[in-house]
Image 1 (spheres, one colour):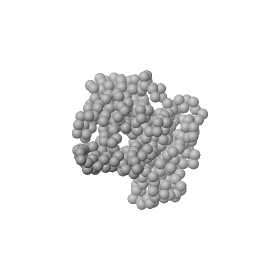
Image 2: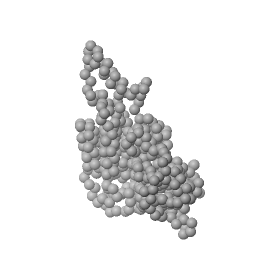
Image 3: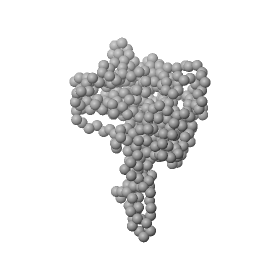
Image 4: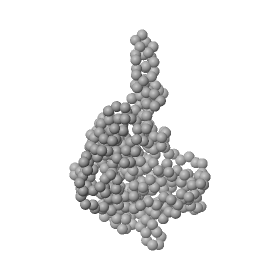
Length: 410
């Protein structure tokens, strides 16, 4: 919320209204122009457009519309059923018919009246949509996993920095679900942490499927977008595309964005990267493992107590230990009010970096993607966390990016 001489625009507007009423020519100012407790004045609202409004996107859109400062003005989806349903939801909330519905994200992200773009497309579209939005002056909230490749994550971060945009990833579980672990590990309850274990699924495969008729109202060519073309099959849309390598990093990146992100944050390595990805060798490494410069090892699998667990010099903790009181320490987390959505909206106003800033998201996804590359090539990898590149393996380095189907480029 901008301020001038200690007053918000809303306060200035109300002051002007009061002065006008005191003159010999009283002005009538509608309450909608001034705002109220439940609905800020127009000058204090954030015009928001939503790209990808089926499934998770629909739920997240409803979450954002629950904030009084958010004014939904546009929705976009390649599935007409999804976008019509989303437009009706926004219009119902706004009590008008002003929300525009698009089948092409470019019509939305280039609108000059939109402040914020939300993206919940399939993963292979995330980078193109969000980078184009930032180039057009929009702040961005993007569902996890933010990228299909390591190079995309780097470009998203670098674009946010170049254009001074606020970019939050959507890994709400990192703090919302795992903050007890963060206080235990950072507070020294298990001594110096040595190992973290992340129990999530693995990488996707090619997922070849026979052709089926494209549903009415579905723009399948646009849904494929930058990915290699393949015929429509209901196995892909609306959700199971996560099992296909062309569209997603599988569970390694999907739940991994939450869980590797949570493990890295607890161990305070969320702003760096590993030096090595080791595949199981039957001796020192029983699971695929990300090894960090400080000796920390984050294992893919092998945990004993739920989805993440930790081992240190003075003990270990898992999900079954949550009845233990955590050290009373403060760890910086969400700003503003309202969990990860509120954190993002607060940072849009203040221009701070949000809790799941894209720089941190890129570091998390680097670990997830490196695991997948090691699995696909069936060999361990060395990584330079400063230069952010694979060391001494040109074949593996080619997996840092993917070719995109014309005409889609970044």
